[in-house]
Image (cartoon, rainbow, N blue to C red; front, side):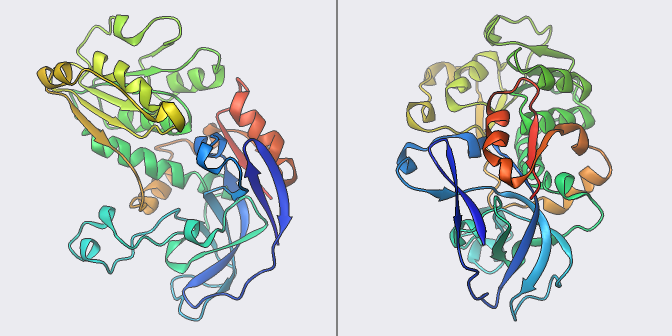
Length: 333
């Protein structure tokens, strides 16, 4: 079985034999896998080892374990990158987002940039009516849904969405659909396709932070919600922009020094701000994300800017990392 691994920025290939399937697992032939921003990052703690990657996956079931009952061979599915066990104390108390026994293909060292992969059976969600490249967007859309949920968007909210990568664009579309009063987006100008799509998805204005610091912008209103999809150091700008009593929700991650944010806690305190961390693991909104894609609440096909074969994965990664025209890059083996 051919799989891709990365070491730093280098993409390499290796062959692994298909292992016997445990009773609670499934084997999936990958039909599409999206490139996530985290796939492009270089983790200094893993720079000397080869790691599998790719977690935005749609495919076809080719084998099921003896205990799997939710899907059958030949059915098209999407895979949750992490699934609540349903059995631990937190799950049984209705707090699945705090599951202590998450089921995930991450723990199986099996990932989506491959011809086939294995996953927990419980992570396979039936989806036979969407094209695979659109269906695999359900994973990042579930992340966007969770971020918007934590942002507590209301009809009178004035919202700034920081970053217009695929998840930021999804957030912009959801916030506009929810009826927020004003919706602003920030995105560097050189990512021209993302700027254009932010306007199409409902942003009243797109601000270019490399030209004018966000704190210097006259929004014409008090920003009471800031949804951050950019790296942690940008939280300082979010705190500056947010009005008194504002909510700042974030998902941006990074490594090394960029994993840290130093801010004036007194100013944060006196403005009565709230900081809320979104981490959609386990995934709780895959069925809802698929519904939103079907109904074009979020226009999945509009997000897909590039498609590459698995053989061209290195080129796909380079395009996603630096092309001004890149929004969501999908690999279709």
